[in-house]
Image 1 (cartoon, rainbow, N blue to C red):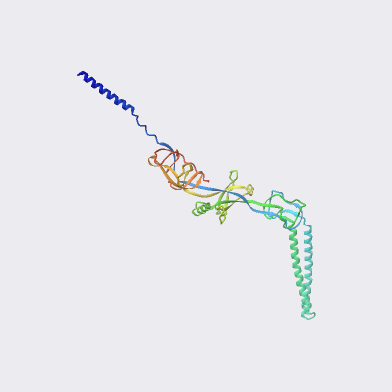
Image 2: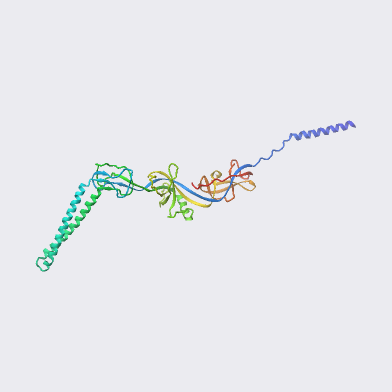
Length: 386
């Protein structure tokens, strides 16, 4: 009896041991992975203004070539090369001797003809009563009247000759046609010049103000017109649109300009429209032909929404998309519409609203529906330029 009980106990102990060994062979399930950490920014509507930089070149407002209008030898150069000149300022003196002689001759002829006119008129006046009394023939009186008329015509012709001679004499002083900056002289004293020659003596360029001509895509011009219509683009007190100027070295010109006009036709080969801005240039810092960028305001949105470019991607259909932190900290895919780029940020025209949490960091391998651990970040600032 004792032996049978001992065997049964041994059997139970072995069974328990086998169950224990079998349980030890099974692995416990791994713990669930922690949600990925992502950085996000909260959308807050703000005032967003943007500008467009358009490449162009500076152009002189006026340029005038100086040419002689009479022939002769250059006696003097009356200006300093590279200086500013005023309109009408004498630049060269052509030898006036022959023109002075022609003027004196024309003046003497005028005086002679004026004396002859006086004599002819006196004669006609004297013959009038004599012809009435038939003391002289009617033919003699008619000849006297005709002689007075001919003398008057000679005086008028002499006057014209004097004026022409005076003009030619005045032309011996070659004057500046406009005010501006004069360049190098192509002739020196002693050179022979001829009237209306093709080669110029010098060139005068008006540098203040100065033009900046740029080519704007026609689509941007439409945005510009819409900005005027809805009040997003403001004009100054004179009704002009302010324009800034960026120089070739990246620095900004210190005086503001104004948009003057836009061309009325689109260049079919480039799809662009000519824009012209005017800038004050009192120190002649800007010279014609300089490569610059006109910085043109394209509008101001009082409640604009922007997202950094790094947060925006595109799906297979080409739609712009962002990932949001949704309810329960789960990832949501949102399609958005974008407009201009401002400071490396997209202006969002639809698809986002105030309070949306847009994921900025940790986007790699992130799929919609996944739970994440969101960490708030500071949104980049807007400095309003494109």
